[in-house]
Amino acid sequence: MSAVFKQHVRKLVDVSEEELTAILPFFETLTPAKKTNLLEEGKVCKYDYFVVKGCLRLFFVNNKGVEKTIQFAIENWWIADYTSLQLQIPSEFYIQAVEKSEVLAISVSDRETMLARYPKMERYFRLVHQKAHAAAQYRTRYQGDYSKEELYLHFSRSFPEFVQRVPQHLLASYLGLTPEYLSELRARRIS
Image (cartoon, rainbow, N blue to C red):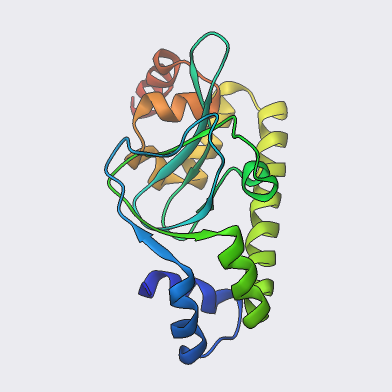
């Protein structure tokens, strides 16, 4: 099991090395290349993904054919279409590698078996999902309250690693900006 994942689990719950070693078989390691889709619209989401290295994004294609990114996941973050995963219904989203990545994938059935055997992991997943839910609430608030420029400035200060790593057109999509306007904001900020 990756040292990154072990460290992440230990930040949230008290688990032994033996427990972490026993948890390993529940996960599958994947190494998607850049632009590889781990999930496509119309398919059922089969895994919850933990990013060990790299960057993934969750997006949909709107009725005008434009991709709209709604979530990124970098190291130590989880990503899935949770509605599709839990209900086992076709997804309305794509999950794609933004860069060459290494991820740990766990299916619903394997996660449930793991949680039954290792109840401490129930707390781990609860805390992970609480943090993710809180982040989504704040993102919605900021999108409704901040101007486009304020939204970009807040995001670039809060997550400078994204501004450096994520292609500009994907960052613009996530922030609800055009790539041209984002380029203008960046140029203003540099000068």
